[in-house]
Length: 400
Figure 1 (cartoon, helix red, strand yellow):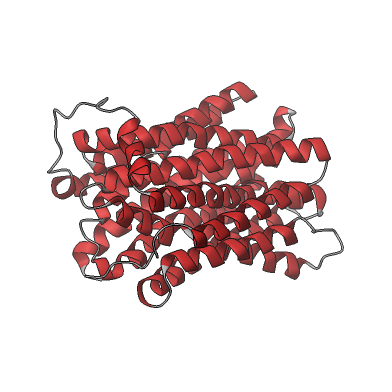
Figure 2: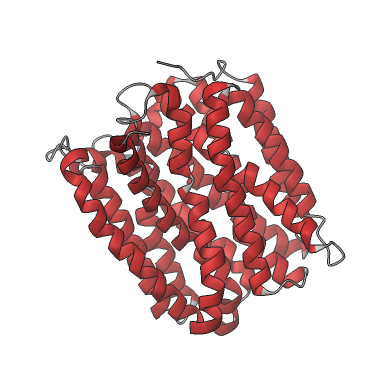
């Protein structure tokens, strides 16, 4: 890949990785924080829901900010909100302050997809669009890997406040690194573009224009809900019910994220060259449904390697789909509307990650079991994949 494409790709991937690391950190640290504050660890589902609920709204508002200030400046704002959110967690001594941190993080997190899409559509050749967007989307599982592998030792050595404080440094450094890209990618910003022009309705109009775009948006909602249901509850589930240590559960989450990282690149290459994006995404829905059913059947009698294998399957499917889906929705959005299409992608995915983890937590509370919660994930993923096969046009990526 030529250097002009590689530099913005790396920058946008790191932005996504660090913001995802911050968002995933609560899923890893939940047992320690819950024990210290005297609350139930399953509340992590409501924390994640709040992050992504706020993120869904900020995603829809982000195109006007991107047009006015530029995608790089908006990406810097994302990192600043992640940094501030970490500091609020460090200062927290009750659930209300943790809720404030979730709002702060979500305020910035929502703009990541729209900002990066606005940058990458300018440097991604159509014949490699799925691959490039999939490479960028590896930032999400990379952030999860960082949280799953680095945070547990920090939690044991420095406590959860010290661990969160350590995460603030890379966020601060990236703000300064991104400044070097502003002359190129923020040069076309429109300083007088109104921030409230069309409000949240401007990106949503894309949903009214194209049935295929609407169908893909539904899939994005439920697949992202499946992804966060796996990621947000994996550590709590394995430590509370399956007698995993915190380090073992962190390793399981890391396997989930590594599988998601590697598979995103694989699926992106296949969608560019061999398999229509719509067919590939439908198949991934069926496979993630199978992983959810298996996760609901975990018990202490399962060998650890089998649980790790299911975590890998879940990562390759429920985390691996995103690059192909984002690239397809940007294509369906049409020329000159990358920021708006990216905003819709971010909004519907964040909506899914708002609703599904909250429902998951509620079902666990009411049933005292993870089985029914994972069955919900399985049903919605499978139904979404089937719907995708029956809807819209063929989903073959257009080539130059």
